[in-house]
Length: 187
Image 1: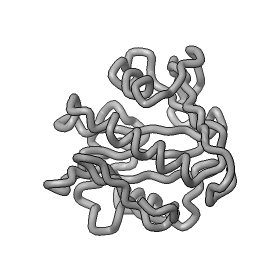
Image 2: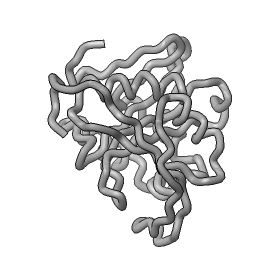
Image 3: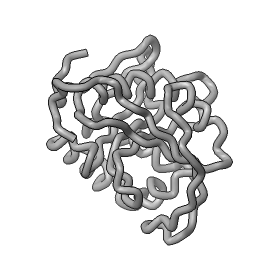
């Protein structure tokens, strides 16, 4: 792994985490079919524009006041297995870490593997003291992923989510970064 922001290719034992590219459109569209991710599902009618929006975010690589989303791909087949992102939480106004794994790939440890490597990548490049993770109270597998990766449970919260206009109860986690000084992008 290099320390640059623009050349993103995070490799783990079984996965490649990288920026999306135009050629990924068909695989990217698979992410829009997961019913548990309403925010992505509502983008389905404008899938091409949604991908282009993600591509445009790579110009700034801003996880503090913007969004950066990468694809998670199987290292052997190059098939997409999910996405992983760091972004400003629209309602909490803090940098947030999130991911989703396609149903066929769940239960294989891909979320933990991609999350650990991506958190390390973030810590080496951004000057932020922590990043949050929010998980619905009923989503035990995702809570386990965050805890396995070192996120610390803070509390349970309830929030009116502006883009869905509904109240959501969730667990709020923080991942404290230990690296101080030398990152490439200020927080």
